[in-house]
Length: 179
Image (cartoon, rainbow, N blue to C red; front, side, top):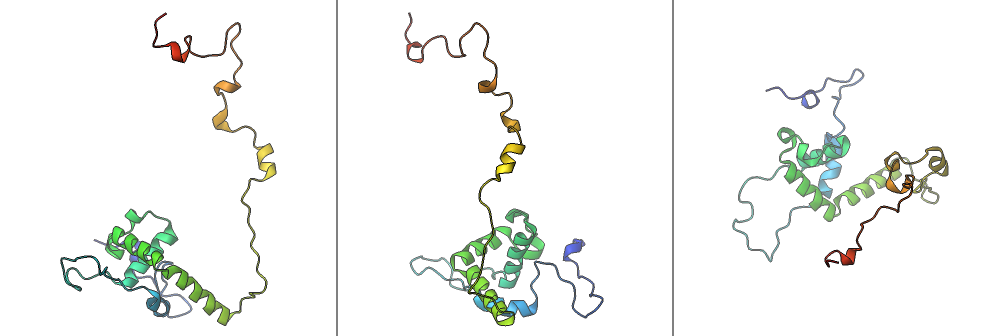
């Protein structure tokens, strides 16, 4: 069975000797910086385990799990659709993702990246700005017209002629009591 194109060995780039890698693949140079930040698994001292430490199936390598996490973040695919042949069990990759979030791995990775960028280029920490909007634009409210899902609702229809508004003929409380 052949691997999908995205998992096959990519051709070399025309101007250099580095192979083209996908956006979720981790280069050796980047992995050297990431590997020390990954938290080690810990055993709960209050829990009684059936196996000794190190027993059972060997764990999936951290680099493979990290690439699986990057695959989900870059492609936007659901965790259950993660290619098992390439990254291992999707539920195991997701469990590592949640454990690493709780251990602060991604915050430490972000901080290390900012520190490295600050050393390379320099970040002007004294002046930063953020641009964003959290409300609807006033023009969007007036130019769009009524919401298409609200058209034809009961409260917007013309009332029936010569009749009362719709409602039960008998008061709600008197329904159980015969007249």
